[in-house]
Image (cartoon, rainbow, N blue to C red; front, side):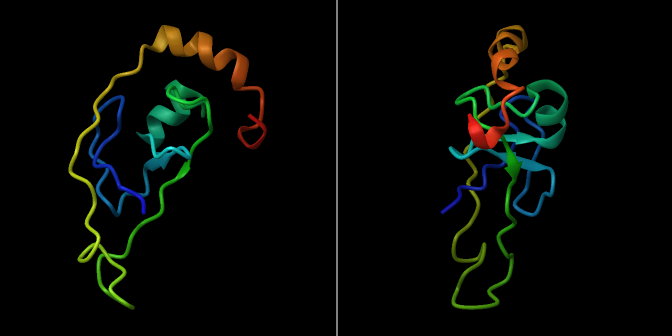
Length: 102
């Protein structure tokens, strides 16, 4: 189950569970859309993978207890600002490769 981390790992912008701005890689590294698009170039600084919009977990229990009420979002902040110079070198080799082929 997704943790639904509460903020961008780079800039610490809040990303509540309902945020359409949250982006995740396959390891759930979580960044805001602005950082992914403008700084990270769709290359995860932790694994090299690409990002997708994070799904929104229903706030209400519409069916079978599947909601934030039963499975709340994480409150553990992972604020680890990216070294942008090192990331630029890392991403340079990967950004031309489609995320699904990395």
